[in-house]
Image (tube, rainbow, N blue to C red; front, side, top):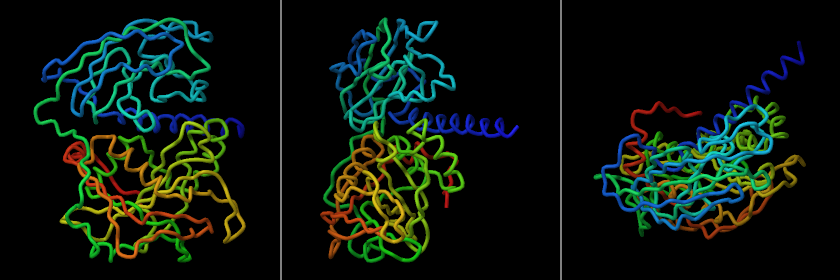
Length: 394
């Protein structure tokens, strides 16, 4: 009985971890639309993919708000499968959860799409048919959901139709602006420059702000492929065991509680890199400010990039080492969030006496140009989040 009791929770948690990652990715590329596009038909193109190919450049540049309608046919066969895969993909079983695919929200062999920068754009499921609204301007690429060492035989044929944006579409490329009203030194006089640990030791630098409602803030992170991090440290041991068979579960390993405005973070978000997730992940903590900007909610955050491990100088324990150039992580946050089409304005503010070099609470050093990234969420983010049931995890 004891053995059975152990195996069952492991199976369930792996499944739940997979489902949460899949759910995040399924909403990451823009808005799926069930309605027929109302805009002008702009172009049609057919592309054939074989099982040996990875991402294929369609040579089609789409614009924010345009409908990308794809219909796919064909069959793919994998050596360990008894049946062919269609563009919808093969249903994933328990063993298949251990295979890390470009898009874990669908089975092996599924047809995928991607719009924009390959380093930050989130893939979306095309399957046998999709109607997706492009979140940003960018090049459209398509691929088969498989790892390079496990290709199938056969081919898919995809017909791609692009339609103009619907009237009143609110998706748009984020505008770089010189300033955002209410973001000034008076505001920064109320924001601590650094977060800290429970003992009050100063840690990471506050390096970004987000202006917008809570539901919209959650929407933009989820759309950009960030995963909400576990808040319950009691899950750490079990998740740590799962990590030994699936690196992706490392994403939801709890972050240590750190403090700003006298309390621990309201949210933690993590974004995985394709390889070596255990030693490397992009992560951030975010707090709701106890004051507003022009009547809007203000979120204050600190983002860093784990690149390995080092000794914690407070207790000689093992802790994550952050990339000392924290401006690179600030840029990563900007690129991933603006890639969603849910950010309207972007600026960089340099406070009086900017922080440019310091050490974290664990003894690691970092440096910065001192600027703080400021993102204002768009009406699209607000409307997409309206009516959703959301709550803080604090």
